Length: 157
Image (cartoon, rainbow, N blue to C red; front, side, top):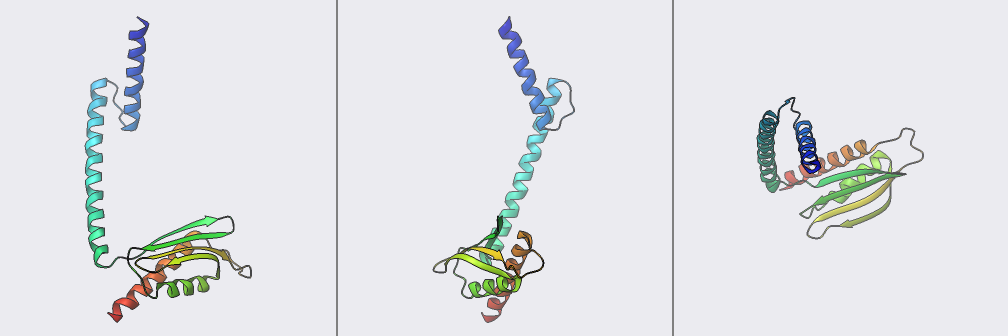
């Protein structure tokens, strides 16, 4: 008897979890399951749209791939990563100029420019600088430098 009650309680708990995950307002089991089924279909459609968007982005990136950029805030500065699957002649100079314009001192950097382009740099704010900068500002400056570099290389081709 305890086992049957335990199973019933476990089933009820799982249905309530399913109800909360799917944002269902249903009360009975059948409606909760129907709502969950609809929710799964919506998720499938979202995944399909995202996959189509990724395919479209990859197609456009295959024609003119721009480097990926991440900027993380460290205790005293930023960790800046720039990566491209292809070599990017001249990009390093553009990035260093952007760092200089921001007043960002590069404290440590690793760069590879052979078959691909990879930059990993730790930058700290110039202590003489009056206003502080955040990771988003650094990322926007790096993206702008990449855009300017890309437009410059497109004109040369």
